[in-house]
Image (cartoon, rainbow, N blue to C red; front, side, top):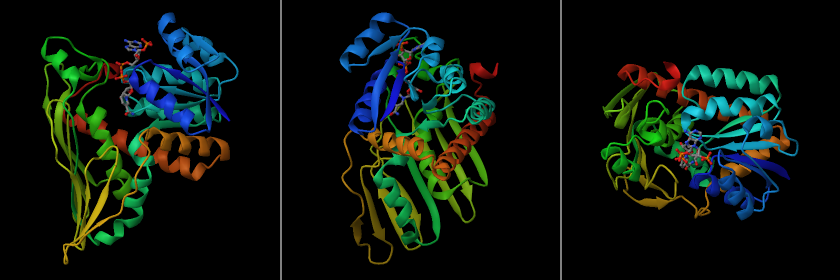
Length: 328
Ligand SMILES: NC(=O)c1ccc[n+]([C@@H]2O[C@H](COP(=O)([O-])OP(=O)(O)OC[C@H]3O[C@@H](n4cnc5c(N)ncnc54)[C@H](OP(=O)(O)O)[C@@H]3O)[C@@H](O)[C@H]2O)c1
């Protein structure tokens, strides 16, 4: 059984704890929060034996194998390092880091200390993503794809009222592409690999980050367009078009359904399975398997995808003068 600890006390941390416990591969060892009351309350809710308000102290403590980090994006790098340096594996929420320089340095430290550093991105670990990957050749020669994650954020109302929530802040490495666009982007990178060319067309907000945007990934004979937004609502499906057929996904995350439509017969075939409601359980199972078995091949694949995704989002920001606090 793998012992895990958590950093950050937002709703996503509770989702992760519940999924990790449901995976039956992990047990909760400790909680960190800046607030002792919050740390204690979450520890009590899930029977964690320890809680901390000092990251260094938690990093140095024994009885923790892996730490899940779900703090604002800009803090990931500084919070990941103490754990890696103390030989603890890390599962860090998406987007893993603000810059590629941080990504390289953190992976160097992970390697030096013989531990794994995972990016928590829920959609690519699901059975339905694997089905899509396994069946992709049904579509024949790929010609276009339109993958989207468009979700009006309740935090946008605060932004419109003059506040700057972390996810809309350049100081905290926010924005639509790194927050939501990474889900369809991971699908693209996982299925099609690294593109030859990247172009990003954002809608910039007063804080300097992208409230929405269109990312164009060019491949040989094939173009993938990614739409992301935190400032509008959409019911648009995602599609992958090949000469022989089209895959239709109602959402990029979670990938709750996958249908294949034959180009010639127009016959639709549902390929997807019903997935667990707590879909973070799939990433927990993957990370636990890699930690337990030391499966470096699987780890290197995930690491390459994480590297490619961050390289693309960094290039997209560079093209549009979106500068994070970590870069100033
Ligand atoms: N996988 C998913 O589906 C999913 C969903 C949502 C979010 N996320 C990711 O999870 C991470 C956290 O997102 P979120 O929306 O929960 O962020 P958030 O609400 O801004 O902050 C999360 C936690 O970080 C701590 N924190 C907040 N501001 C801080 C500051 N200025 N300095 C130090 N600690 C601070 C707080 O915990 P304490 O007060 O207890 O210290 C807070 O509960 C992000 O990377 C996001 O992309 C992933």
